[in-house]
Image 1 (tube, rainbow, N blue to C red):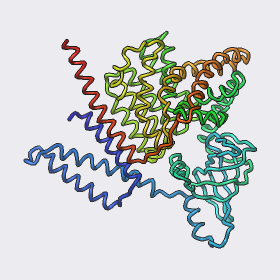
Image 2 (tube, rainbow, N blue to C red; image 1 turned 30 degrees about the vertical axis):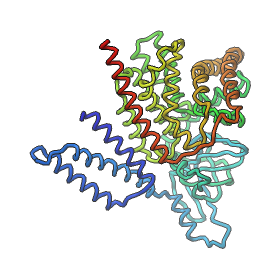
Image 3 (cartoon, rainbow, N blue to C red; image 1 turned 180 degrees about the vertical axis):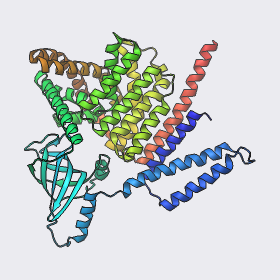
Length: 519
């Protein structure tokens, strides 16, 4: 077996171990016993002078080591305890169950991300620097999710004093809310606290970071306002969604139409959206520079876009996946970027193992990228007769490839399957890059010359109107989507069958190409 294959299976074993660890845990003693056993097996079966030489047994033991390492990596997350969690647990043990007035505390800190608005409330990620409860004072560096009224509205970097009750996140329905928050480093919540502005003493580095991101978010807000002034609604909200991932202004009826047609993914900041932006930049620079130079400009565009959207963890992960796709495009499809993709995924999972099972964005970006790499070469022969005007054929191949690989995850998370997803995506995705180009140009022009932005905004409105119209038309039939749910076993079985099918089709494609060469 080639070294690159061994490296791939090592990474895959670690990832599978983390996934398994999200369902069960093992004790340190058990892990140690397994590790020692594997080490002995490796020593016995891989000694070249031994008659028992069998590299396969040695490799199996080696892979088992990394699998156990993955399980233990996830288990370490479950055993970590944070100060605010300790405080909540201590509070639960002290408070009399008959007493309905739990302890309230004061937290000092600042908002570490943009507020999220939903209905009549705001969700604020609050970076707590200090806790006060009577005479009890402790310094902190922890995040708390605050839920408060819509007004007054807050912004990133606001230094605040909040007073209320700290709680652990509570799961609801079939949604693991605690894990959803934990993947972003949030382990406690506070509902409708008393909030007032204060002045804080923060470190020089924190001050520089907060100041930088304040300017970035101010630029983002100005850009969104420029779009809103230049394009009428709901088209403006749609453009801000595909460019910046903003959804707060999109009407509920339109969001429902996106869900019914399986097109919600274009509103999320994913590897796909960032890749489109990078490819657009690459195409523009290819008009003036050679391919290697254009590639680095594309990477720079990914970095700048990531900063513009706030450099949140989900966006950073999407940017990494997009960069890998760009690298694969530069090297050519015949090269195998498998190890690069799995290495990037393993590195992100090592840093934050919770994302493997509980971060929908990471999962969709990762699987869509694998689809582009592995499915597209297999199915491209079915699209050979399609004209390639404006990269239409390539867009179709990318669309179908990504849709196939993310389908089971979409069913698992959203409990429905859109029967019109493929045709709708085939119709609107070729227009997404065009919408993003005109939307981006409109936003920039509107910042400089409002009248020019409004003039260019007509073209952005026209293109997005076509997309929104297609989505609304296909969303109307009752049969457009069917409620259908599967569990993790179903997801695993689907991917196992898909891999077997791809291997079979891949061999068939290679055999046919060999026959064509002979003829």
